[in-house]
Image (cartoon, rainbow, N blue to C red; front, top):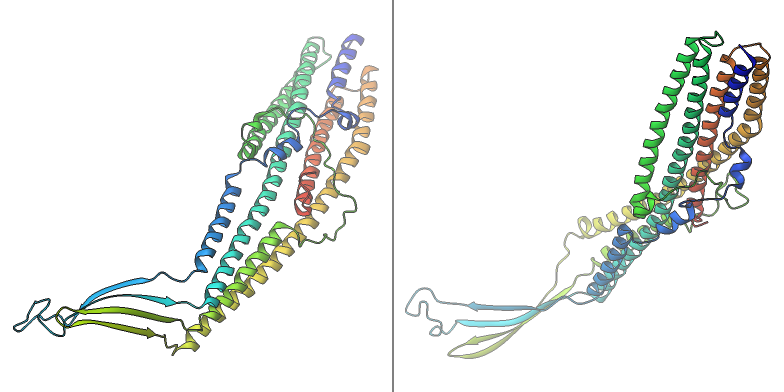
Length: 422
């Protein structure tokens, strides 16, 4: 092979082995839809959050109704209406026939009404706490969808550049076949590499489309805006450790506490049911030929089966309150697990990025330069430089994926710590 052909091949391989450096990534100015903008856009109109607020308002309205006494009931009737004899079907002839009209009401104890109102207001608090939890979850989902989309874009840019450079290298190889400086097998190998990279490129495009669809779920058409070319490093609070911070303020914990309060309030409601309520009625009786009469009555339920009815309801409410306490503890443990797993994922991905940048990339660059020098000096073949290029591409893809894993772990940590607005 002549010196010019070797120089052309070496230059083509060198172009392939030149993805953006780590220094470029750190200093590149962000363009397109930033992560902060995406999270801010998610604070807008969210039907799910509005639904929780409506549920809370509905509970507040119901609590007002629960504090009120039941409505009066109007009663009307006829007594002792004859259907046989000489006065049959006469509305006025029989002395005992009487028409009645009156009112009645169940006099529910104030303590019962107040207990029920307090329980309903506790349900309003549950709805609002669930809204806060959902809002934080939405911010996390937006962050993850944005990270997935940027990761897919970064992979596409890397693959687009690689495919273009491989095609340029393939032309050089093809040109060297007639002169014997290359072989048809090497050209076919380059074609295979191009096909594999095109398949990966198609996968990356599908991944971006899916991520943008997830992002559009929360921020609408803004998800179609251009995205940054590189994944930024998401800043985390200092002093992270394996032990999670206090989680009492997390919305999931707050919602579980509110649900426990509802269950506790229900115990008081069923306890109040052990107190019977008085019902009363007053009516006016009219006898057409004999004047009017007034009647009054009261009624009181007899709790003759309290052991198997009222007491059982109290026991059921106590068991539900105990179940709510267990769910609260389970939620706390799950958040602790999520925090530890996220910290482990973050630190592991961070170490992987450092190894790639500080060890793998310099080693591959040195190996390529050595192979290039041998090839330019008349020794070796094209196989070795192109093998190093393939390996370099794999490492570059691993770097993109590691940075994305680190960013997703950071999003999870911020979700748990409550700093997704950072």
